[in-house]
Structures are given as C-alpha cells and as structure tokens.
Image 1: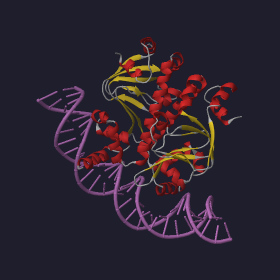
Image 2: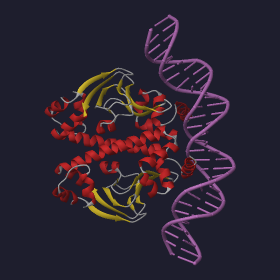
Image 3: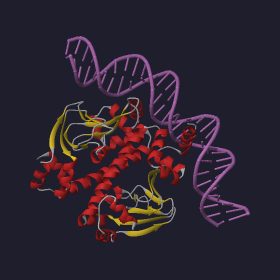
Image 4: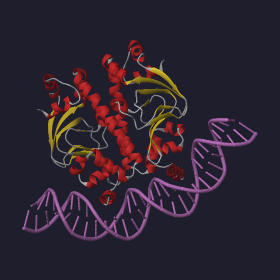
Length: 191
Length: 191
DNA sequence: AAAAATTGTAGACAAATGTCTATGAAATAC
DNA sequence: GTATTTCATAGACATTTGTCTACAATTTTT
C-alpha cells in the first residue's frame, strides 16, 4: 500500500479513488543527506510528507549558532508553516539528516484539495488539531521543566528520535547545549 | 455589531444568516475574577471565545508552583485543546484575571458546525493555521533566546499584555521567575 | 588505509537564573 | 478607614547552565 494512503487513512477514511485524486497533487522528491529542502530567505512553497529519512528545521542566530526547532522522521510533515501560509520569506533552514524521500504539495494545491475533497479537509483539520496538542505540550515542558526533566520527557515521548539523531541535535532541540545534555545523561545513568 | 460576528468575519466571509446559525450554537457565560472556567482533572467541555476580560491557563507542579501556559484577552479562545479534542482530563486550570464574558461552544457543536457551515469550517482551519504559526514562534523564542530577549520579544509582540497582566504572571508565561524578570527590566531601563 | 570530520565526554571557570528573605507601595477586602 | 493581600524590587547566596579547551572514539571522505 502507498505509504501516504496508509497515513491519510489513519485520520480520514478515504476511498482508492479519493486517494488517486489526492496523490495527483503531490510531487515525489528525494533529498540527499545534508541537502536542503528550504533555506533562510526563501519562501516555503511546499509542505513535504516524509516517506523515508530524517530531517531537521533550524535557524541560525547572529552568532552563527544553529537552533533546531523541529525534528522529523517518517510520516511527519516538513515545512515552515508561516512562510507557507503567509507567503513570506522563511527564517528557517530545513535539511536532511539522512537520505530522504518526500511527497511535496504546494499551498495552492492544499487549498484546491480542501475544497474538492472532504476527506482532505478532514485530514488537515485533524493534523492541525494534533499539532496544536503536541506543541502545547512542548511549550509547557519548555517553560516549566529543568533540562534534565525535559530530556526525560523527550526520551519518553520520542524514543525513536533518540536512536536517530545525534545528541548535539537533540540538545539544541531541547534548548540546551550538548555539554549540558552530556552532563544530564551522565547524571541519569547513575540512577 | 455582535463581537463574535465581527471576529469571524476577519477570517471567513459570512452572511447574517450564517451568523445567526453559528451563534445559536454558542452559550454566553460570565466569569468573575479568580473564578475558574476549567480545573485540573476536569474534561474541557467547551472552548470559550472571550468577549471581555482577561484569563490565564496554568498548571500546578508537584511543588505547588503555578506555571502559566497561556494568557488570553478579548478575541482569544480559552480552553485546553487536548482535553477538548481527546475527551481526557485536563492537567490545566483556566481562571479569570478580570471579570470576563465568554461565548462557549461544545465539541459536539464544533463538529456539527464544521459540517453544516462551510464558513465555520474555514474559520477553524484559519484559526488553527494562525495558532500553529504563533506557537512555532513561541517555541523558537523559548529554546533559543535568553530571558532578556524573550521578554523583549514578548513586549514587542504583545504590548497590550504588558499593561494587562502583573509581572509575576508574565514572568511565569516566559518560563522565568518574577525575580529574574524584575532584574531583566531593571537592566533594560538602563539602556 | 590515511585523512578529515563528526560525535560524545570531561573539567575549569563564567554567566545566567533560581531561591529565599525582607521591605515598601499599591490595590483590594472588610 | 483600616487591615489584608498583591505586587514589584532588592540583595545574598545556591544551583543550573553556558563557554571554552582538550581529547578520544567513531564515522565519513578521499
């Protein structure tokens, strides 16, 4: 079964005909490790559904430090929603941590599909609901927990990320330095 | 003009008939200062559109410290989306910082309206898009900036909040203590 | 296989932030 | 109007986290 078909069916029941229609609006794309899907200053023309691989979204501050804002693996959507929706230049970079395969869909096509295909409308509603729920949790964690608890939380909620991304990437995602994460892990091992 | 009508029209063009229909699914409610809209352990049965007043959402940790997760004023939606969508007990409290007036809508009614009324469907899509965009910014700020820059950001993005909520509330929202915020402000005054 | 880059850890020190106590001003309750 | 609570600040000290340098293990590139 097509991975995108399987994925969509988890959120909205669709027929094979629906899916043929939906699929026709997506463009497959392969991105090699360290290649970019989006660069700072560009407009995010497409959202990308990840079929295979691992990616990250980050921004680079004045000092040149990269801050990782999102991590993505299979069945996640890569893109800068603000730039995508508003049509403004992005402040983020998105690149591949492993060789990756995506299906891209443009803003125009999401708008068409939303109107044409009730199942797709349902899908976007539910995805945004889920995204709202998980970002709420991330914010709660971020404003109220210590580095150690945030990492514990992260390991519990995303065990597959721990295997997949190096520690300095995870540290940045958590808003701490790799040094602090290393200390935190050492402390946790003693328990 | 009805404030809810005015608000919805900013996102989706609706007729007066549409609005009469939509409005019939909302229930007006007044909440006095320090009264709760939601308590920890309860299921969030309704989302509340704030017509007048100011509210906050927070959770209380093991030590009894309150961590403020959201601040709301007029034209914002108060509620715990996770509990609302999933039907699970909330970990959050929501209470009023000023006497407030809301329009409440239940989960079932949002689902009915989404199907019955295309404009309401459009509204929820756009609200979630905007919410996704702003929480993304908040996360970026939270993981990458110092307390001082986070506060600067906050003042620039939400100047009306600064007037409306006491400093210890804002500090908690930013994930710092009131003492740190006081120091940060003192430092900024010297500039 | 050798060279280069990436990754994780360690320790010393610095900076940022938290904790606690105290105090006075302002707002609110009685 | 007085008492009480809330709010903001201050300073001393503790803790957490960041910064920097070094180094070894591993992976990747050539």
